[in-house]
Amino acid sequence: MAKTLKETLAAQIPKLRKEKQQVLKSVGDKKMSDVVVAQAFGGMRGVKGMICDTSVVEPDKGLIIRGIPILKIKNKLPEEIFWLLITGKLPTAEELKIFQKELRALSDVPNYIWKVLKAMPKSSHPMAMLDTAILAMENESIFRKRYNEGMAKTEYWEPALEDAMKIIATIHTIAAGVYRIKYKKGALIAPSNKLDWGADYARMLGMPTKKGQNYEMMRLYLTLHTDHEGGNVSANTCHTVGSALSDPYYAVSAGLNGLAGPLHGLANQECLGWIIDTMKKFGGAPSEKEIEDYAWETLNAHKVIPGYGHAVLRVTDPRFTAFNGFGKKYLKKDPIFQTVDRVFKIVPKVLKAHGKAANPWPNVDAGSGALLYNAGIKEFEYYTVLFSVSRSMGMLAQLVLNRALGTAITRPKSVSTAWVKKTIK
Ligand code: HAX
Image (cartoon, rainbow, N blue to C red; front, top):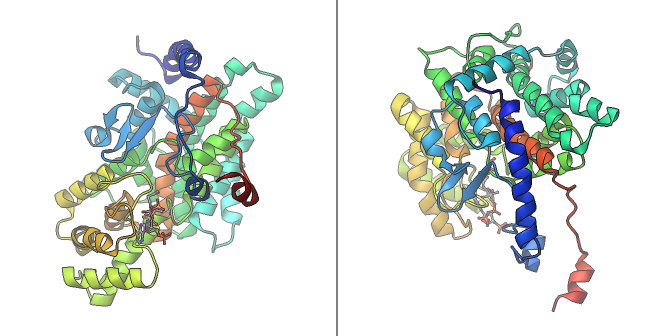
C-alpha cells in the first residue's frame, strides 16, 4: 500500500543514521578540503565544509537532484520534486495523490497573517512581506511546542516535517496574498481543492490560464527553483539557523531574507529590469550591436550584468535552458523573450572579452522574468517571491533531513586579520 511522506521517511531514517555513523567511523578523521587565506576573505568559495544530500551543483553540468539532472525532471510537479528531495525517489502516482491531499488539508492560512500583511507599509518590499508572514506563522510551530514538552532528539524530524508541510501547504497562498494586497489586485483568492500546487498558485495570483500555458509555466518555474545544494546564501542560512534548533518557520524566514539579496534571488527582479531598460533605450527589441554596446556601458559603469555569472557553475545554467525552451515553444513573437534570447547570444562574448567574470554564461535568473512578464506578472519586485515559494521546498527538505540525522549546530572558527598577518607565512 502507498505510504505517506512521513511513513516513507520514517522507514529510511535508521539506514540514513547508520550510513552517517559508518562514514564517520571509516573516514571521519580524513581531510576533505584545504582553505587558503583568499577563500577566508572571499565568502569561503569552494571550501567543502558541510553535507547536503538533496542536490549537487556540478560546475560543468548544473543542478542534479538526487542523482537526476534537472532537465530530465523539468516536467515533474514541484510536489514530486519535494518528495524526491526528501526521500531520494520520485513518488508513485498514488503517493503523490496522498501527499497532495495532505497538503490541501493543511492549506488554511491563519487570519492573523492577513492582518499582519495588511498592516505593513504600502511601500514594503514583497519579500519583506513574505518573510514577515512566515515568521509570524511561527506561532503555529509544532516543533517548538514539542521541544518545550521535552521530545527526544530522535524525534526532532517528525515535528520538523509537520512544520515543513504546513509551510509548503500555505506559502503559495500567502505569496499570492502578498501580490494581491501589495498591488491592489482585489480580494484574496482562496486555495482550491482540485488543482496541483503550482497551478493553484497561478490561479490565486489571478493569472489568466491561457489554455493552461500559464499553469505549465508556473509548474516549470517552481520545479526548477526548488533546490541548489547547501552552500548558497539562502540554504546555508536556513541550515545555520535550523542547526540551533530554531524551528522551521524561523529557519525558512531567515533563509528567505538571504534570498532577498540582489546578488542572490533578487537578481531576477534586476534581470528583467536590465532587459527592459535596453528595450527602452533602443525603442523595442534591440539589435545584437545595440545589446553589445549596452552591455559594455553597464560594465564600464562598474555594474554587473544581472543574470550572468555564477559562484559555482561554469556552463549555461540548465534551468536557463529549460526556460528558453518554454519561451521558444510559446513566446517566439514576444519582444521581451526575443531580447532575452538575443542577449544570450551577445553577453557571454562581452563578459569573456571583459575578462573578469569566472563564468560568462547565463544563470537561472536570466530567462525566467520574460516568462513571468508574459504571464501578466509585471511587477519585477515580486519575482523573488515566486523564487522563494519554490526554494522553500529545498530549504525545508534539507532541514528535515538534518533534524533526522542529528546534524550539529553550525560553528565554524573565524580568525582575525591580525591572526592571519602574524600566523600565516
Ligand atoms: N557582470 C559583471 N561582472 C561580473 C559578473 C557579471 N554578470 N559576474 C561576475 N562579475 C565580476 C564580479 O563582480 C567580480 O568582480 P570584482 O573582482 O571586481 O569583485 C569578478 O567578476 C569575479 O567574480 P566571479 O568569481 O566570477 O563571481 P562570484 O562568484 O564572486 O559572484 C555572482 C557570482 C553570481 C554574484 C556574480 O556572477 C554576479 O554578480 N552576477 C550578476 C548577478 C546575478 O545574476 N546573480 C544571480 C546568481 C544566481 C543566483 O544565486 N540566483 O539566486
